[in-house]
Length: 236
Ligand SMILES: Nc1ncnc2c1ncn2[C@@H]1O[C@H](COP(=O)(O)OP(=O)(O)O)[C@@H](O)[C@H]1O
Ligand SMILES: [Mg+2]
Image 1 (cartoon, rainbow, N blue to C red):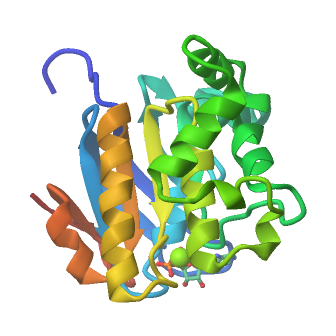
Image 2: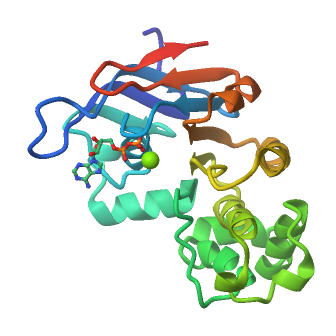
């Protein structure tokens, strides 16, 4: 490598093995993403997609190798600093959304800023947090009548948009999404992808998007394919 690595995401010889397993669930020799790049991670069920995202989010730590995000080596951070780093710089859309069911749509979205002074500051530079949350939800086509409703009363497709708004508020540099379209039919999936890309482009996020649906790959400039029990293959 020549010069310092200014990638937003950088993996070097990363291995992760679950206790008791005889092979690595994640094995990625090298991966670098620049600001604003969009990576599609595909692979069958059990190929390690969620495990990889949890490594990138600093929820798991690799058995070997190095993960650098925004020039920070995650292994140098204590667990609580890693949690704060995630809250400040990463938006995560979990496979099961992980929304707080009895809080309202708006409360779920604004909570991201309660956990991160950095995100809160980035929002309040231009508007207040609730106004920004409303704008994001509307941009994601979630009508205002749902903004004050507890999220357990929303459909899966609506909850998914709440999860995306929660992940995007405060302008994280990195957005990670784990199979967010798996519960949608083809029309809703395509509409969702369009809205997601629109917001990701508007904020200039680096996007890492996981799906087992190969049809979605065409929207991405780069693809990483995970296979069960083999090394990851990259193509771009
Ligand atoms: N908490 C866990 N403990 C032990 N093994 C796990 C755990 N979570 C996932 N695995 C194993 O890791 C492999 C990859 O799982 P996962 O990352 O969830 O795959 P994917 O998201 O691609 O379906 C599977 O073989 C699974 O059994
Ligand atoms: Mg998964």
